[in-house]
Image 1 (cartoon, rainbow, N blue to C red):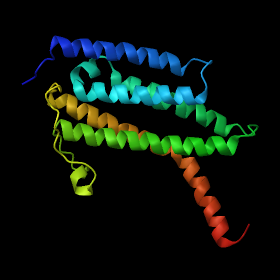
Image 2 (image 1 turned 30 degrees about the vertical axis):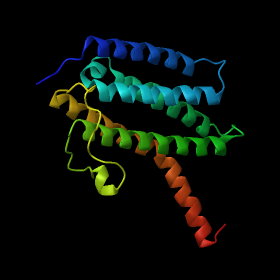
Image 3 (image 1 turned 180 degrees about the vertical axis):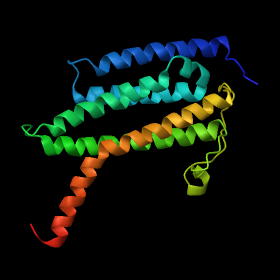
Image 4 (image 1 turned 60 degrees about the horizontal axis):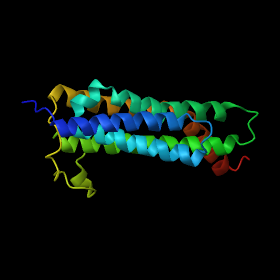
Length: 192
């Protein structure tokens, strides 16, 4: 049974959508420094995560999951990759380190989002270890009154979406991993 949100919840979700638009504009504002853009990106991630968990049907209808990937992760990954590939960039090694850290953060975000979605919506994925088995968090949700119960197909879709983006992150990180493995191999062999 699909339960529709109250008028109050709909207003809250509309407000969150408007807030997301402001944050996306902040992230592309050339007047802001890296710290402010990072803060806006974190706020956007938190906001979209809240929308996905609170009313998945509404969030999917508004394509929140696509905006989350594109604006909070993909655009930054693409920017950092371009800077890291530029051999003339004097800060290339710093950019590569930042890219590696950003990819780890993206992976952590999607892993945590998948865990939360599975817990909140009671989705049992064969590849997922329950959080409580890892000693991280309880599998029981305490504040489910404000959560709109989604269709099972929507739950499957969003879980697949998280898994796809976890898979997307691996190739971005592969050249860095290969380079790190080569350096480690050279250092261990003493042929440097």
